[in-house]
Image 1 (cartoon, rainbow, N blue to C red):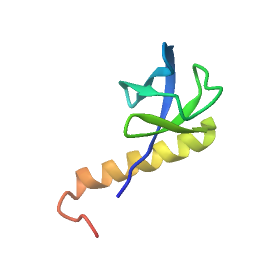
Image 2: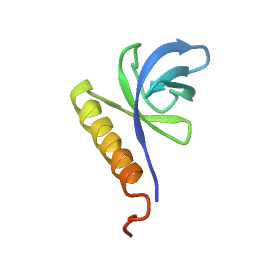
Image 3: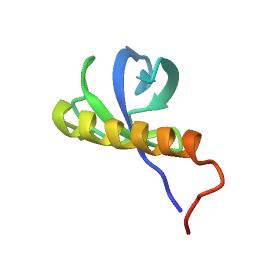
Image 4: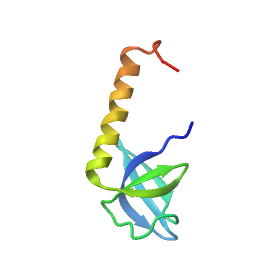
Length: 82
């Protein structure tokens, strides 16, 4: 299973790199696969690469779903469904 997460670009770095943030956690990712990314944009991140830009509304929806999944798992850790 692949998991791609929306992240906000908080700083552009040299060599097509950027610092992104998700839930207060910051990581460095490559922007080489996505054009015209600016600070404040949301990108979909998969294994250290930004693979697409995402508008803020769609990013908020996706992040809310991830939060809901995490909350459900905390409340019911033994009820993971396949």
